[in-house]
Image (cartoon, rainbow, N blue to C red):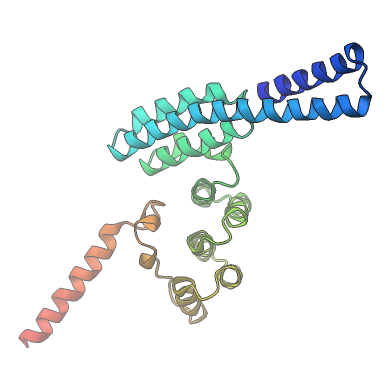
Length: 241
């Protein structure tokens, strides 16, 4: 990583120069070198992250304008900063994988999601779902463990994990995950409701999570609309009778 190497080189150069040319003790010189290292590292990091952030903001505008392909290209250009700063590459992979997943290009999204930042819970959930669809249940669980570890206070991450476990026939584990999620999100109504549903042997209801839920493509908004329309039609028929 260039940032670390440059900072370390600067620190070492200052330390050696103070010992050799100013006659300072190794302790004083080492302390000065540490200060130089910290200042150099922070300054370089700020410059790199500012430029990186500008590209991510540009890509976000493209996503909001439904220009997903252009957004991906802009994000890919941010890879040039990965040698300069830790976790930049993983963050870019998470963003690209998420955008490709959102546009339902699942096969293209998978390699990016597999190399995504583990604390990006949305990307980790998308990765878990991708593994579930490929019947790779062990890898699915590993991805969701990363998602919930990185987002303990995000109820949806626990709910999606439980939802996928239920779909793969692991009912008891799904209940355990919701119970664990509630210990981290005490009083969350959506988690509590779904836990009660599973304990009663019923299907989970995820619509309370809103648009965030639908971006994972486990249920289409149209399915809810059809159910509501059907219910309304039924009520009208009953009234006519």
